[in-house]
Image 1 (tube, rainbow, N blue to C red):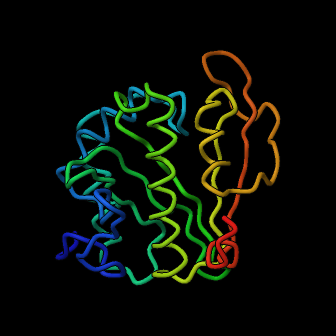
Image 2 (cartoon, rainbow, N blue to C red):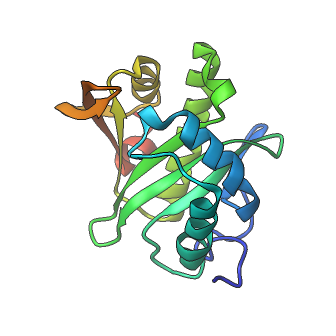
Length: 196
């Protein structure tokens, strides 16, 4: 268990854009995150509903352990509006040799209903996570993967400056139906030069 309440690599200060911010995920976020994950399971690489016990164990055994690591395997952040938790995500599958990672993102289920608002908030989150990944962590590439049945999410990723790298055909089964996965990426140079 960590003696820090945040990733030592990030420090305690949040990354901010207007009234939005991201900072290290907290243990108190575990229950709302569990609920959102269970409600939106068809969007995730999650095979079954998470129990409270499983979520607590994951936070204490995996997430808090990574807080002390200088090269953690993932960095999960809380996404807040005026300091109120509205979502979470981060950079997972971090490859410190090739300086790349995959962005994950999940918004409070209630906030996903309005398409325009969802696109705007995902865009804010992606810009904040690019700041973290490229400027703070020194990564070269950030990737993301979205299931094609989530057209609003796929559109939001493109609007956030991610280039489509390809389609993984019939990649996952969602509600008994095969669905493609859309893979996108953003390079550090594209972000720094303002083309993403």
